[in-house]
Image (cartoon, rainbow, N blue to C red; front, side, top):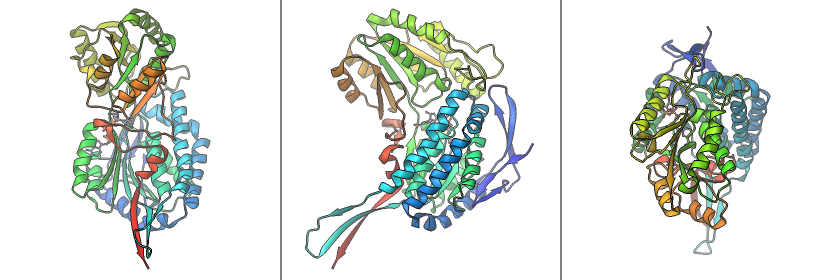
Length: 475
Ligand code: NAP
């Protein structure tokens, strides 16, 4: 089996120790690739390359940088099917969803290519006639980017797009479970002729690579997407050099169905939010709150929809729910369901591993959930939805906000006043009103509370890679 390599300063390289590791397909448990396993030394080289390439890259015009990003966008669209297939092979996502991820991922490059041309400064009236005050924006410097496996391509380009457009160079450390997605993207970046050192890829020991990115003073910013626990460690480490950080962390999304909602739409929305990516999405429904008066009716509609979902290998075009990413993820889901049933939840459908070989869990619905169940406060990351009931708007807002997380929240209503009141009171960075899939490139994505710091997407996303400088000119 050919070993896939790291990409440092425009060269493909083995790990310095010669170490490799194997990547498996969660739908079949079969080894699909062998990848170089790097560590701190390779990261040092990658950081040096990013540092050396920075002045040249930052000095290009925004239009010139946009040219590279647009070339990469076009190559991604040309390779869409192959890239999508890699996602499905490495982490199990149904191929249709993987194709959608590539569209979104490529769009982050295109949108930021244009947005880079709109990095405006300011001119401020001075306090004396012989002074001028200018505010300019400059790229922050070389960036260390660490990404997760659940959206292995779009989480990468959501960082690369704005960072590169702003004039930063980058060292990327992708998730160990999905290295080929990153490797293929870097092969395309080579075809797009990015200058050497602008983009560097290190795969391997997360702790050693992460520590080097934090401790190496040439890295001026850490941008991370992943779990809250790892994010906290990175924030702590970055504090020693007061390094800038952007953190896109975990979530525990409430999904509220009011009694005036269109129940058919709300049930369809719940299916989209919960079961896409087998429930392994940071913004997916974790707690489903249904008004007491419509509980039975809604549960019947939703149960029917969930029962009809087709589980299988993501490469099959008709698959709607693929496997979980690994055995550990499957065990966590099993444990949460067991705990909920022990504490009084009732099973409407699912509740066990599916008969397929591989790491499959049946799409599951639990009624009569309560706040003391682990599933009510721990991120689920699997195809299980617990249903709670409520009677008043105030009560459900309080329950929805009763979490350390604050990434995404959803509610369904046909009452205009309620849609404004509730969206303003939910303590979340993203709110979907009758909308289970709000993510778009032009809007700021990110969380409050322990779900993160900073935003990705929109004009806010590029700001994360810029420093503001105030220049006072006396003449
Ligand atoms: P994770 O375990 O935190 O890993 C994320 C990345 O961090 C991976 O590349 C991982 O490397 C690396 N990592 C792990 N330990 C590290 C350390 N000590 N130092 C430096 N890097 C380290 O998260 P995950 O399981 O991949 O992803 C799922 C989590 O991501 C969920 O909590 C989800 O909610 C969150 N997420 C958030 C967003 C958002 O936008 N807010 C989007 C997607 C996912 P290895 O793979 O080598 O371990």
